[in-house]
Structure formats: C-alpha cells, structure tokens
Image (cartoon, rainbow, N blue to C red; front, side, top):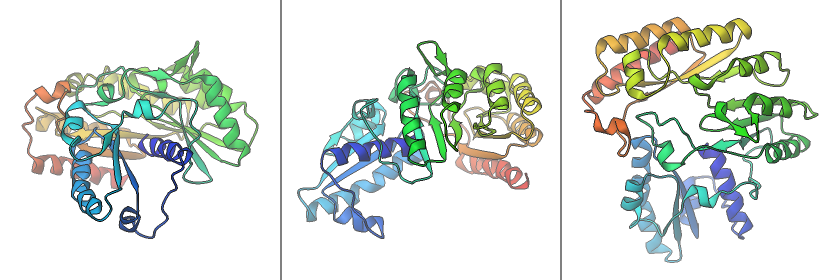
Length: 331
C-alpha cells in the first residue's frame, strides 16, 4: 500500500510542476532536493523510528538550503503527528492528498502495477492502527477500477495487483470482490491479476470458486493468521479460531490444487505464553505456508492492545521470531 501511495504522491507532485531527482545514491538526491515528502507508516514502531532518524538529516539539509520544504504524510497516528509537527514544514492527511479517481499514478515499472480498490478497515484488530489512520472502509468505484486496469493492459502491463487493507470486504453498488474480479477478467489482453490483503473471516466460498475457475487470477492468496492460539487470536480480535482458519486453508487447497498461501505471524503479543507460542509453531509446521512475514509485537498507542502489559522481552521475541523463521527456511 505504501508503494502504491508513493506512486500516486509522485503523480500529484509532477502535476504541480515538480520533477524527481535522478541520483545514484539517495543521499545525493536529498542534498539537491527543494521538496522532500516522507510517506510514513505507523503500523510498527520501527517504521516510526526510521522517520525520527531522518529528522537530523533534514535539519542539516535545511542549513545548506533554506528553501527546502519537508512534508510528512501516510498512515500517521494523532500522537505521532503532534511529535513530528516541529520537525516538518507540513503534515498532510494521506486521505486528502490522494483522492480517487483524479490521480493517474507515476508507476515505478513497466511490468506490474498497483491498483488500489479500497482503503480503510472496519476490523479493529487490537494491535493495529490502520482504522485510526485510514478510517473506515471505503470502496472505489468498480467503473473507475475497470477503466484504470484497461488503460494499464493497453499500455502493456502484465500483472495487475489489486490493493486494500481487506480486499475481501470490497463492495461498490452491490458489486462485491468476486464479482469485481470476474469483471476484470473479461478485459481483453494477456495479463495476470493478483491481490492483497485478505482477512480470513471474510474470505468467502464465492471468492475461492472465482479464483479456482479463473484463467487470469494468480493462484496465490495472502491470508494472515497472526497466531496459532485461540486465546491470543481472541485478544487480537481476529474474529476466527485456529479450527476455522485451518478448515479454510483445507478448503482452498482442495478447490485450488497447488495454490500458494502466504501468511503473517506476530510473535510476543502481550501475555503470549511459551505454550501458546508452541501452538503457533505447531500450526505453522502443519499448514506449510509458501511464505511467512514474521513481526515482533510492538505497542502502538491508541490501540486496545496498548493497554495490555507488554511483558515479553525483546530477546524472547527475537528467539520466537527465529524459531518460526527456521521453519520458514525448511519449507
């Protein structure tokens, strides 16, 4: 999502007369820039810390170039906006900066293209800031999505990647996600369709059937499980159990033989016992994901989980991350 947003931000700037700086090293580009836009993500504290790392660089650049303007945008919590206000000239809401359907993105390559179909999230997972930074789910017009994809295919793009915090919940004027996929598949041309991210509780039989019978949709599904323990899943407010998730994976593999299923895992969630983590290890071994993205839990102010005691050390979180990563490399 951030890469797609950055492509659209670039388009906004170019429409205003700005030109990207071509340089071998990023530092060279920063040194000669008149405007720097930082597209931030508040989902993980580590990402926020990286922005803090840029602040001192910007201060030195401004000393050399007083005309330099710095802008912060992206998924930013209110708390972070207040902290960063003294470091940036402007802080802009990503929802105001990027408005459909006016923006024609500056795509970063000539083969694959990101096409956002919805933004926001209604799920309020206890560890996630997205509903607070992106707001409630808003689906883009199917007509506009089809128009953009047609244009991309006509320009020779071979892979169309549909994006949303929860693509499964896409709905615009009674057109749900499976119906949208069927409409896109009818577009003439030699291209593939993929999408991310899906929420397990919203992945329907209709969607599985649509993927199974399609000639253009990739047989790849990213389906975050986050934990293999029911009590932790409940604390995370994920809306499913290990049994339901496992049954869903079985259903996908039976209907779509050879499907590649990737997942997200969070280790060290507040209160996660060694036994509960062992349940996650067991599930990961059993389901044999094609890829896994492993994160160490970090508290984010404003979320429900922030009120829980972050009682697992960084050393233990790292040990648990490495334990899952070791399984990942064996698959």
